Image (cartoon, rainbow, N blue to C red; front, side, top):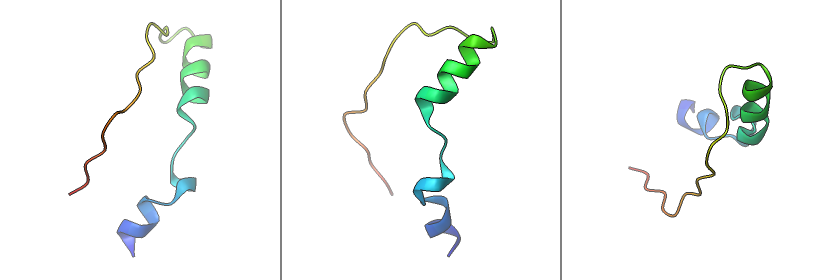
Length: 42
């Protein structure tokens, strides 16, 4: 069951929100937007 729990949508934070908060806190700055083209799971 561990693998299934890790893949649950609620297990991940919204990457846009994390990037925004990180930038507002002065820890980083957004410079580029990347979009995944392929996802390979093994």
